[in-house]
Image 1 (cartoon, one colour):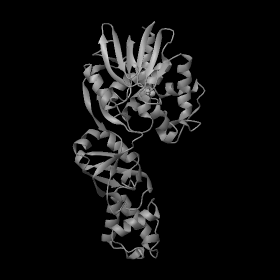
Image 2 (tube, helix red, strand yellow; image 1 turned 90 degrees about the horizontal axis):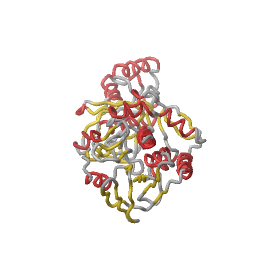
Image 3 (tube, one colour; image 1 turned 135 degrees about the vertical axis):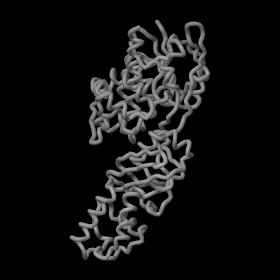
Image 4 (spheres, helix red, strand yellow; image 1 turned 90 degrees about the vertical axis):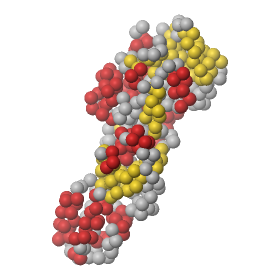
Length: 400
């Protein structure tokens, strides 16, 4: 019986093992940590954002700053609907939330983990934890995997290590080209009076742009202790990961907190002013923002909160609108989520055959997951790439 060694006990490695035909292969998963599926466990705040309810592969690939062309054929064969069916067939009920993210009904990542664990137990897959791979050697038709627990021989290797520099170095030594790693999903560090002490304030729909890069994104926005976060920021950080790394995370960003252009915002303000001339500006609810944020806007715009709205000058109104719709911030660095860290960079995609995720450089060697130069915005997309790639590998091996 031929031997498959899967290096890496994360989402891609486990999903691949769960779909392999155990009557054809002896399967072993090697994981260097004490626990398997660690990222699955903590993803989505412990609820596990399994996938995203986007069922058209052409639309789905738009969420991947790197890998979108290559993933089109992959998603044509296994997409979010197939992922959902796979888990539901294994008694894991899933739900689609308002923003189209998909979670288990249980709101616990353990449901997802248990489904995969039970599948691989039924298949008698051997799992070795605390097993650190030191080197992979090609020996005739086989591979020898040298680890902290001794040597393992394999007919096929499935490489799903995630994007640690050590694992990339190892595959580079085997002949693969590596694209340098840079962080992909991160929040922006900004020190500015407008944001000071307002951590937790959120905006349902904001627009962000980086003029120097001629790029813009929109979505919910969140003020944090260190600056700005939320989908509007994370999306722009993913698409511009490489440019922002080159800029050493020092750049200017323009934020429109209310997603209205200055003309519409001015018209709203004028209409409110005519209907409520006696109201004080500090107590006026003109835009969909919190009172605290509105009052801070007025402070920063140097407008007296107790002034009657009828007495607000054209110049004051212009300053307020400018701070709401076109506020410029200097970004001075980034903060990454240690737990849900996503990177751009990894194995060069030109060296992978996306029909079955096999290496074009190494015979009987397959690759899936974050070790590839593929990444996505937040929302279940990174996992979906793992599930789809892993499924393709399993199908290819089952049909040999």
